[in-house]
Image 1 (spheres, rainbow, N blue to C red):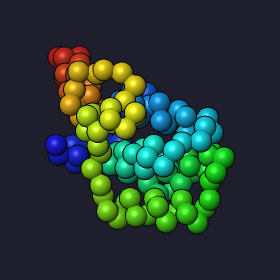
Image 2 (cartoon, rainbow, N blue to C red):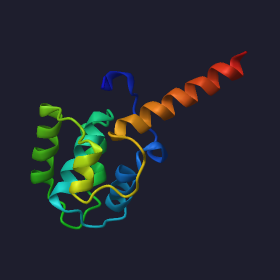
Image 3 (cartoon, rainbow, N blue to C red):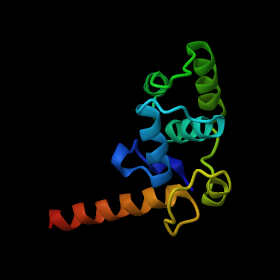
Length: 123
């Protein structure tokens, strides 16, 4: 999938698994390492800046500026791919069956639907 066609997403348009992780993060719930890592990858790929991401992680009870800064910078540098749904399911991160194989497919579908609505309203 070509990530370049995806603009920074509104939070309410996140796939359910990432919306849950995001909501847990901003509510201050301690995420495990895999949840932190997976959400970090997602936010990087959705074009969130270093500052935006580090400020979100400040909500965590175990936040450590030095460690978080290093890890976020590495995620940005490495530009990892977002895990597919099978990986998310096997790691206990999936929260509902969405009928797709990759979370980005939900974003593509939504973007395509919204673009179609916009184009129809223009006429």
